[in-house]
Amino acid sequence: MYYVYILKCSDGSLYTGCTNDLENRIKTHNAGKGAKYTRGRLPVSLVYSKKVENRSEALKLELKIKSLKRSEKFKLIRQNP
Image (cartoon, rainbow, N blue to C red; front, side):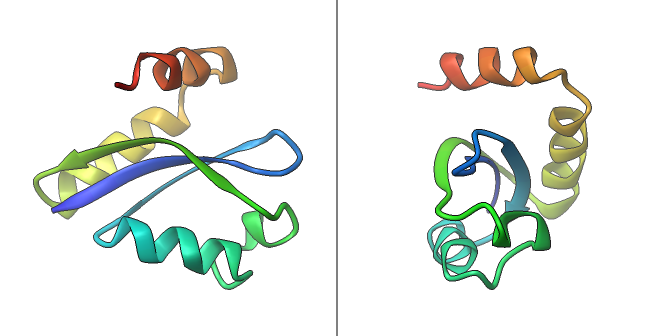
């Protein structure tokens, strides 16, 4: 299983990524060892996640989310159960 996730950074910006270990990945981001983008925007908090079957699906969904406008991302986050 893989997860596609959106993090809200301390500056209010959003970061989208994918992983096969969501809990560990968030800890890695908050330790300053995650993506370069999040390192200067700590702490981050998980605002959206979706479980998918495999890495290929995760990468496709990640790309789709990254192409959304900011307002569309917030709509997606609000719809997350």
